[in-house]
Picture 1 (tube, rainbow, N blue to C red):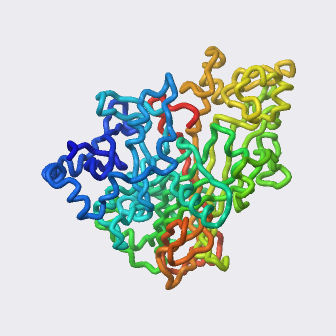
Picture 2 (picture 1 turned 135 degrees about the vertical axis):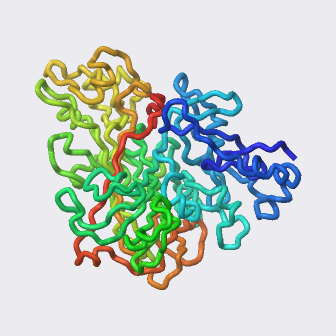
Picture 3 (picture 1 turned 90 degrees about the vertical axis):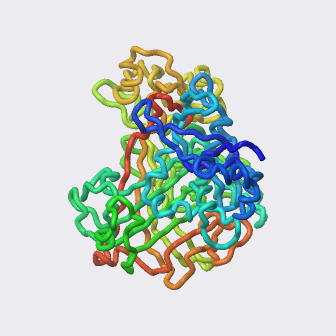
Length: 553
């Protein structure tokens, strides 16, 4: 029996015979020096079990395979970038969960943590948004139930299974591999590690506009927005969490339209929330109103079509959005030609628009290097009818680290000589724009914004694209949340779908992804006379690890 070690599994440390790794953790958004206290669960509370019973205890709970649980493809992708990242790859990979398929997946971790092997704080150089454990959906165990591994096959989440559960980065991508193989589709879709971003909303203070309450855990008001208020109130209050893979540092999104999205919502009527025994803990609230719903879905979402993207036209001073005439055809990769098109888009800045709206003449201010990725999620039966639909989300970034720079345009402006390592990629680095003088003869350069504050108004030279001092680190992000109509009256609460949320079946099949939703038929617009439900926006600058986060992030 090995000594009692522990693995960080979303803050729940368990005996090493459950999972390998080490305990870690300093919350990224705490004040400098404030350390997160992680419970060493079995090792501290029941060392007799951890040391004396060991694998016998695990087998009794159906966990005999955890010690040898295989890594998913998503594990082990991150490597420290010298000289900025001081944490080891081994320490990074100790932050994992076991997904519904029994494999290990990377999960949320803070950008700064204390490595127990050295006793020192170290940095990872990237962040994954907000800690899901602070979501009310963690308190109700909805997150854990959405992603737990049913190790003993009894159809319910047992305490030991819950201890291994969390948000598994890349789980749908992994299931897609199996689905592609089973259906003879010669493709795959794997994504990098740093692009996985989590956002949640527990109440109106998490929402950027139309605030209706100061209660941090009172839910987000759902209805039709008016002049600074929710003008038509459904009486429903929703608690949201979403995880999207949105890489804004590489060329991946120029071509690939499939990106993993997890969406969870628990919507309760205000009358139920008024009867909580603890107003800051949703798990203490009754769930009696017939319009209450819970949704936990995970898909590979097609954001428009593969082989290109849509230019973000407002940077060209054109108010047009998501228009097919602005689609930039780039070409396919080995895999993307097999990807389906879908509802949504990837609006990305192009060099042509940058030369209009970012490199500007005197008297103007540079616009934002803004990316907007709208999507409409749904889960559909094999005949195409929806179980849930109209989950209209949007993921945006206001400080993307890269933009689209066509190769011919690079030669014209001399960028091919400045960045020869990027030749053939159609990639340009946003931070380089702060030093771009290719249009100086026309009086056009950056003016204001991230370039000014990151370079101290031009006094600091040579800040590279992946330097933590850069003004373009992908930290300033927003998510739009919106509940969708549910059409599952009398149906099962667990469905199995293909990676895109289609072909829903009450029984699993090869490569199927598990979905969970209430057995109800509910459309919140009917509560306000058929008026459309407006999305609510969460927007923030995410924790930068005390100035240590850098691109790629």
